[in-house]
Length: 289
Image (cartoon, rainbow, N blue to C red):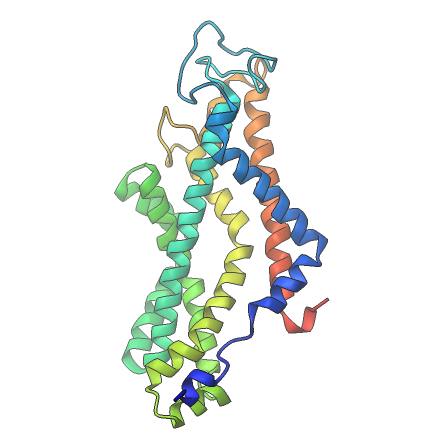
């Protein structure tokens, strides 16, 4: 026999949000652009007959042409191959940072809201301490302690971006403690952790994911910016920020080294902004259209 806990609706269906997103031109445009970029990155090795790290000193700083569509760098490496390989690394870092920070924030915030008392106080004091220090300063301090590298960059950024998600998840849980479906579940005999997990956690996750969608562009900027400073992926591996850094010495004689990664970063950020803002508006019942 189905219990009341299992029959109460725990969160608004995602079908309505998806339907509203499909009707929005900005969401469709952002999704199409991101899909094309990701498809090109995934299919890159099959599309480009060059290894991204392979040097060819007979083709140093070759301009864009039939042999090298985006030209070559100071070591004769094909820029299109490096752009696609670097894009995979940049987007992987961005995705990992968001997954880790969202998961950590959701767990800490939900646990603080459900447990209350001393657990809530300790968790929120940790959040306040993390938010009191500028994110850039804390990230640089962590990278100074851990050292440069792709993995350390991901960990340092994730360690400084989870507190806002924790605060948002906690606020949602606290606001929903007296909701009818939660109270009904409690009256049906469900424990408070079980009722919160079934009725509040999905909604908290949805709210956090909407905010995370808006943070994608900012995260990409952080990843590429720190890589530009030499704190991310290390040579000879490609990454969009590393490619920008390498192009500085050759702006006058090889401007294509700057244009390709710059354009890729701008296009991806604009696409994520379009998709993120559309998702936020489509998720807001007051802004449905």
